[in-house]
Length: 152
Image (tube, rainbow, N blue to C red):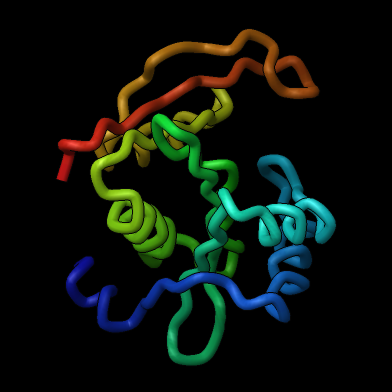
């Protein structure tokens, strides 16, 4: 199935005029952090950050933000809007991240209650490495996950 999806989906770095569309997705997102245009633009301008988008022939379908550090890369945000979910978009974005950061560890944090996301990341080779108690504004814990370089 992913082989078929790779012909339909492509990934690339975001273009500045597309940032507003990402912010619109965030505004209607009922899960996660709800990044605003200011925060997305700030990440876009940082040399240590990359914003990747997934697209098909006609539209953008999702995006991910990663930031590089001396000892690895952290996934700061990933969002696939409702209309594009369950089509392999998240997997395509994560595979693109892994290709871009080959040879580096990748870290992320996910809400403790978001078990489907944890399973998704585990399926991509991530392992739980810790918990940040009461990390989110509502008091929910964050599960820390990592994928070491030799997973491909």
